[in-house]
Amino acid sequence: MNAPDSRIARMRARLEAALAPLECVLDDDSARHAGHAGAASGGGHYNLRIVSAQFEGLKLVTRHRLVYDSVHDMMHTEIHALAIVALAPSEA
Image 1: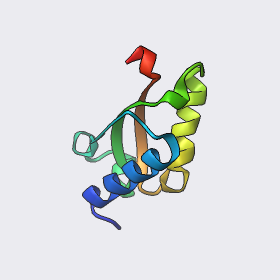
Image 2: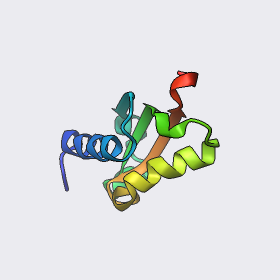
Image 3: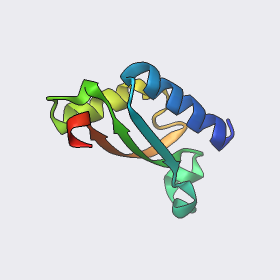
Image 4: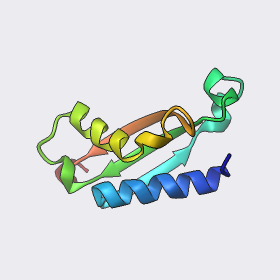
C-alpha cells in the first residue's frame, strides 16, 4: 500500500487535473479513526475543502459527484471516507 503522503499527493493531483481548483486543502484525518473498520482495511479518512469555478451554479450533490469522480478508483481501497466542502469562488 502507498504511504499516506503519496496518497494525498495523488488525490491532490487528480483533483487539480479534474477541477482546476483555486483552493484545495486536503487533510488526512485517519489517526482520529484508528480502530475503525475502514482504517483496518487500509482506507484513509480525509477532509477536503475545495474551491473551483466548475462548481458555480451546481447543486451540492453534483459538486460532490465531480469530486468523487476525480478519485473514483481510489474510493473504498485507499480512501474509506472523504468529507467534502465544495465551494464556488463566489461562495468562498
